[in-house]
Image 1 (cartoon, rainbow, N blue to C red):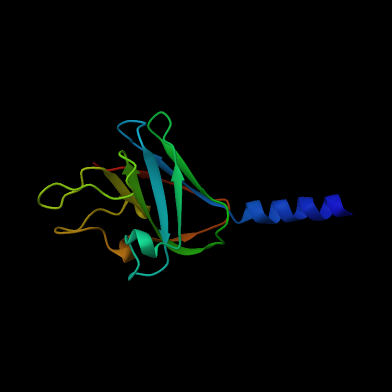
Image 2: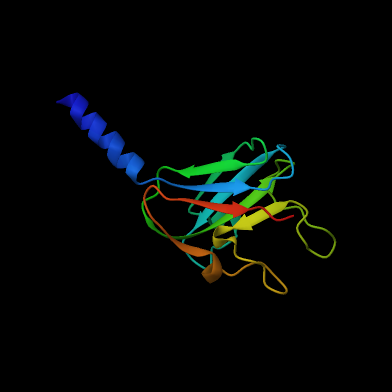
Length: 135
């Protein structure tokens, strides 16, 4: 009986997972940080993320597996943190020097980051989405 309960619990937990595959990394240096945001106020503010996963890139790709999050509406932000300082490096006018992406492959606005609404996605259990990193 105990084994059946544990198996059921494992299956139920894994059914909640969704994944984000990050492609187009220019190298396998540093980390890829995938952050989940629930509100527009928090979007792309690393300290306000609901959860952040840090994974190592392999052959120009990284897989962020959100095992603990239930289905729902979330916007995801990705940073290829090549120098592992947990911050986005920018040039003198504020343009990113490290790779970035957001869910839905939402493009940047004319003078800024993509909007929360453009990155918001309804995530389903077992779903895998893909984004291409931008440099």
